[in-house]
Length: 111
Length: 115
Image (cartoon, rainbow over all chains, first blue to last red; front, side, top):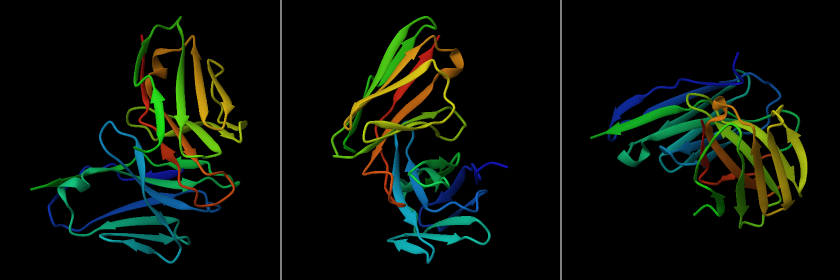
């Protein structure tokens, strides 16, 4: 089983749609969780951290379910500029800041 | 824009060449990282440096040799590479390694092609 598993997509959605991405992780000792965004041929950038209680940043909502080892990202009212690959990222168990990345889910928002 | 720069941005080298990748961070961070990103594969952590000391070598072949002369600079020395080493090499930095939610800032990467 992959350490961090994501549906690669692509998800093709119309502008204004709501889209949800899911991610599962295998190591129950993982401590911290993130969503990064990577545009085509660019570097990854932090979109948001994911906290146990769930958190929201504008149109973006992240949820964590430790029991099911499952992380989600919800994007509401999607914009053309949201088109990118969304990377689910987990902090490796054992401390430090050693991140494990999923392969990413590609989102294409269309007119 | 992110405060982490990498040079060169593109590199083509033969299997017998020796080259070096350079990374510099202007953020005052103490931890620096090398990652490899191959097509259709997730980013793979290669090396971690914390306060110039290497704290992680993720079973990377010896043909990749990192160097961290100070907290702002990180190098990846390459020699006798294989075609399967062709990938995007990303450098990142963070404030430190102790905190759980330390954001990592990435450089633009060096796209390496080994012929």
